[in-house]
Image (cartoon, rainbow, N blue to C red; front, side, top):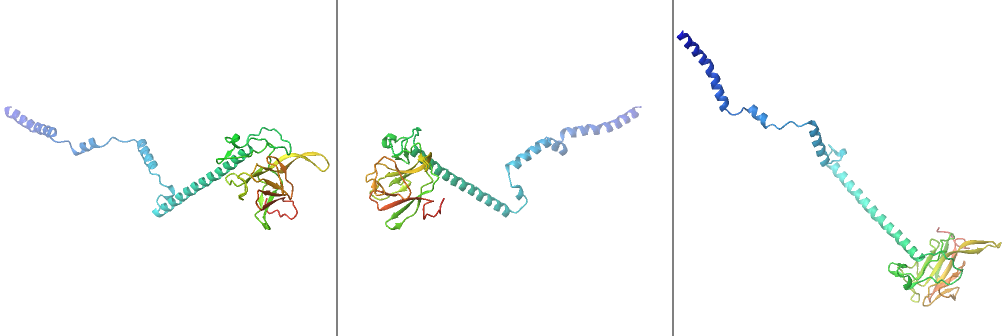
Length: 285
């Protein structure tokens, strides 16, 4: 029995010894490569997060869709065309700003000439007692120059196409069309005048041609309103002349077809006509 038991023990010992040795080797040996890879691998990322990351990458690198997969030359042509279009837009914006500035200047000049209209009607041919000079310097200034004249409440733009035909001796000069505004300032101060008069005998703001809505009597005796041209001398040094007669300053004088106007000692004469006058060609509207 002893031999039997020893044989069994010996056999059991042979069977039990290898597991003990394997346990010692497992406790001493480093982790297997498979386990090491499992520990170092990052946690799985959801498909939602991956799609969000790809969306951010696509937004950070914006490439024209129509040039994806094409050559570099096509993309350069696209960028050049885009730059040219941006330049055109900037130029259009600058031109528009210049046009707006011109319109604002014209409106400001017209407003300064009209001044504060109190609606009071003036008698035809009566003196104009509107304040001028220093009294209206704050509210009647254009481009730093005080306007000596204020348009009346009855100022209107005429429907008749009036014109001034200037002559210097026998020489005919360029025609002046004076039907687009209600008033035209005449003088040597080119910053503010509408019709320049550069002769040394003319004042900086010499005279004005004003269109006014006044009472008019028809041929049959009935009364109506009509826009007529008038002239006023603005207290110039050497005066203004209507048909070679010097007019009084600060008083309206009605102008009629074929009247001749002169300023100071200038040799230039201005003949007043309109599109229906005899011998006049309607070349401009």
